Length: 182
Image (cartoon, rainbow, N blue to C red; front, side, top):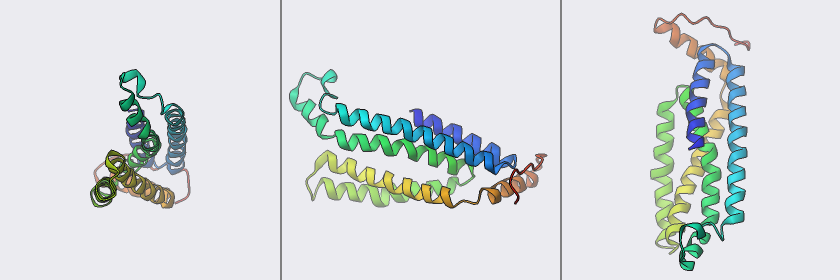
C-alpha cells in the first residue's frame, strides 16, 4: 500500500509542478519518488527471497503449505519489486494528464498480454498458480517498461507549457514561472 500512497503523492506533485510552470521540480520529484520506491522494493524483494522457506510458517502448521508458499517465493519477490515501480510511474502519467494513456496501457498489458501468457503457462505448460502469477508479472513488467520509456522520453518543458495553456483556457490565473527555457 506504500506504493499506492506514492502514486497519489507523485500524481498531485507532478500536476502541481507542471501547472506552476516548474518542469525541473517535476523531474526532481519523479526522480526522488522513483529512487525511494525502488529502494523499498529492493529491500522487500531481498527479504522475501531470504525468508521464502519460512515465510509461510507463521500462518500454518502444515509443512505442505509452507513448501507451497516457498515455491511461490521468487514470483512473489518479483511481484513486490515490479509493483514498487509501476504505481509510481502510473501516478506520474496521471499527474501529467495522461489518464487515457494509462488506461490503455493497463488494458493492453493485463488483458491482452498478462492473462493470455498466464493461461498459457498455467495450463498448457502445467505450472498452475506460478504460471498465472507469472503471466500477471509479464503484464506488470511490460507496463512498467512502457511507462519508463514514456517518462524518460517526455519533454517536461513542453508539458509545463501545455499545462499552463490549459489553466489559462479554463479561466485560471496561474502565472507561468517556468524554471527551464521553453
